[in-house]
Length: 175
View 1: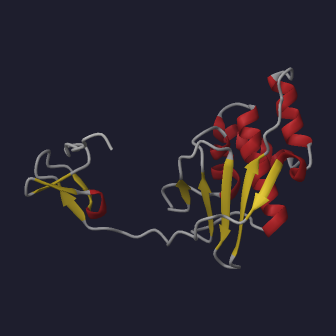
View 2 (view 1 turned 90 degrees about the horizontal axis):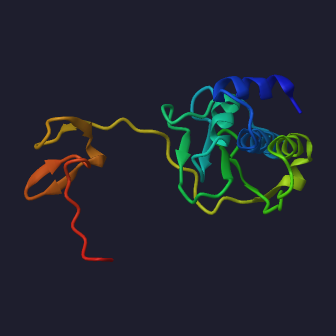
């Protein structure tokens, strides 16, 4: 285990926990399997399927961030991360194996995660979705109800007015 990177992850996240260890080891697994490292811009992309502690390790170690457009959230709730290397056209999906850790203290579970081989902790597969396009800059449109600006692809048309997601009144009849 790279203690320096672990400490960097802990400092970013604010504390040690098993969830952070999952993301930390997922990054280690991706580095071992496809050779990725720190992302200066958008050359490394991570699609996380959860919004839990481990995502902070991805940000701290690989420099994948929502702001740069190379950290994307796909809310399945699974402890899974898909990593893409744009330069070398490599990709891998890393998913935590279902493992019964009942009876282990949090600290014991964390130590197991940090020290076990990545092949023991995760399953590996090809991501089922294509590499997302690079981040684009969109024209800002003002909402005709609240007057706040949002990118054009987030706006809606309602009763002939262009409105933001917050002002849009969804119409649903049950399905």
